[in-house]
Length: 73
Figure (spheres, rainbow, N blue to C red):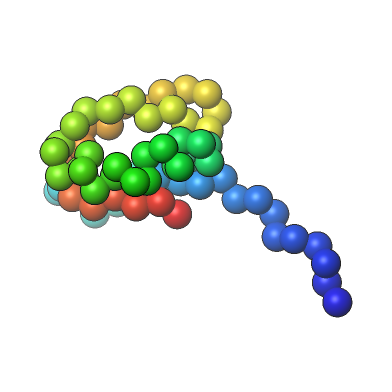
């Protein structure tokens, strides 16, 4: 019986932009995912511009007005 757990994967916010076939993936902390996930539909619908803290402690500013789809991976 294997009792080792799978390695912890850092969550990513995946953004699909209008007019771009390549998705953008932003590594975020579990805390950022937990905070943003319940509001993600509203943020995309309303086209907010928001600073997203990255897993490495930096910020990535996203204009959600250009995002056609977003999800966490």
